[in-house]
Length: 202
Ligand SMILES: Nc1ncnc2c1ncn2[C@@H]1O[C@H](COP(=O)(O)OP(=O)(O)O)[C@@H](O)[C@H]1O
Ligand SMILES: Nc1ccn([C@@H]2O[C@H](COP(=O)(O)O)[C@@H](O)[C@H]2O)c(=O)n1
Figure 1 (cartoon, protein in one colour):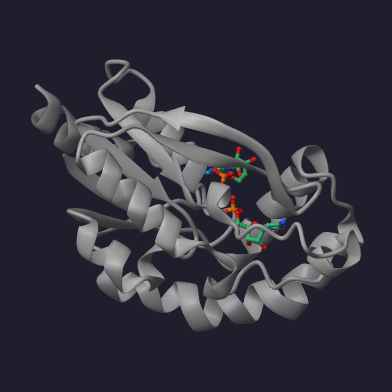
Figure 2: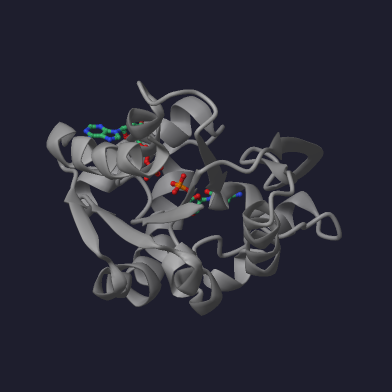
């Protein structure tokens, strides 16, 4: 199994890059684990308390479960990724069955901060977009898809997202084998990653 880690700040385009990679590749050869599914269970907290969680700090992520699932997939065992609601700030109780594939992509803002995961990745990719570009994309996406308003996104950006990005995410570029500039759609870089994957699955 080839395991590819794709990191980068919120709104840099990780999910979009993953979709572009999957597009045109034979179905059933590449699987995806998304860090967004692995925010810790917060059922013991009120909605107000959950809203105030710093979701850009590594402690908000259940890295042990990601590593366990990745090991199981390597051993050929299917796993059930939790489904997460960005509206309720909690797991929904549902799961998504994920089958082992020849190539597994693990994507998320903080995945390179975890040593155990980093060591499991054969290729580490960092997707870069400038912070103003990322904020604009995040605003549009969170208002359209994640039940947020302008004030929520900007307050979270100033209080936690920006400082956590500077402290934890940006320094992870040091570990990357490939940095994809993604201020604009970068089809050349996506094609290079696709070529690497095609070599592995053919
Ligand atoms: N290169 C790009 N240029 C313009 N918009 C983009 C680009 N990549 C992604 N987007 C848009 O920005 C938003 C955030 O992208 P997404 O892939 O969800 O980022 P991430 O997963 O890194 O948070 C989405 O609405 C997406 O359509
Ligand atoms: N309940 C939550 C959980 C996380 N976030 C934000 O999601 C961002 C990471 O997801 P991307 O798809 O953008 O990579 C992260 O920056 C968290 O602030 C949230 O808003 N609410």
